[in-house]
Length: 113
Image 1 (cartoon, one colour):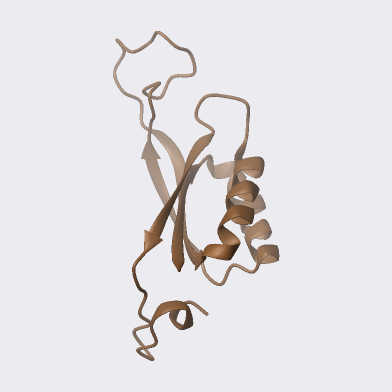
Image 2 (image 1 turned 180 degrees about the vertical axis):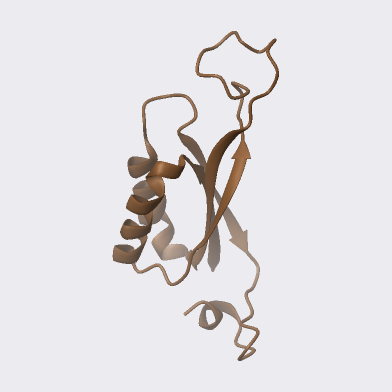
């Protein structure tokens, strides 16, 4: 089964994660520059919820991979993105029902190889 790993991280962590993905055999990656905030509404300290929401610069990484690679990839992202501070990021793992390569019409795993 295919899985989608989607993570939101701090921009300065991207290069290390890209290198780790290459070593783990990631076949493709999509990266977007995004802005957002979590429960802290963009502030580093708790108790500031009365202030307006601050949307902070982040990077969103999306990768479709085989289920067998997910655990190593998620652990790699977690360890490399970790800062010990609020706002280090989030990782999501989602099922992928199918994939289709437009050029060749290949589906499933063959579409991402």
